[in-house]
Length: 299
Image 1 (spheres, one colour):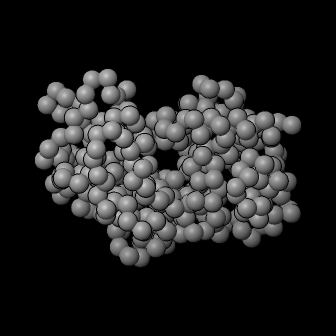
Image 2 (cartoon, rainbow, N blue to C red; image 1 turned 45 degrees about the vertical axis):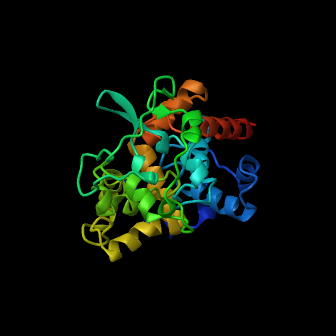
């Protein structure tokens, strides 16, 4: 049975020797911009649970550390909205789709002069499309050259001084993973949290609520009720390191990710990334940190 917060905290760390332990020194070598004390704390938590979740080889551990490091640098456990410049370069906000036979930006309402009716799903089209011409996109994404040269201004309410801007998340996460429309607030409510940045109502329901209920009993804590109380419970996934790690490990194990992580190469990193994110997003950073972790851990 999967073990959660209250079930394992009573067991002192010194009583458990992981099959393949990691050290804070190793993590700090992989992530030098992350404080040593944070690396020590994360290493201790990983070692507590690694055997239960199959992280028993340098290959599997490298993949896990590479993924959580690329997502959070081991310290940023609550997803932050993008800067105006990142909106023009990030995969998410460069997403395109087809409308009236043309490729258009999906999240056009991020930009001034464009709006979309966000009351319901499926995801709405803007009142006017931002057309991406042939040669200015590849696969599902507009090119950064197109984005930076289209002379569109990002709406101020998408990138204001809040580190986690509700308007931004409500636009880019609406109508996916069982989230409601833009106006439902689900995009912000179910934004990325934790070491693997679990995102979307579906994943919170299956990987957080269902697992909590199985261990603690239905009704002991509600993450899904779309109220202030439940929102505070969701925020604890980012605020409590131990619980955050357990949620991420549960997500990892449930996706049978270890089966994809028995060697470290370009193909396996892409497959693990797809298992964690649903698609191969952010491969350069994930490849960098997975390979770096492997080189350090296999010594």
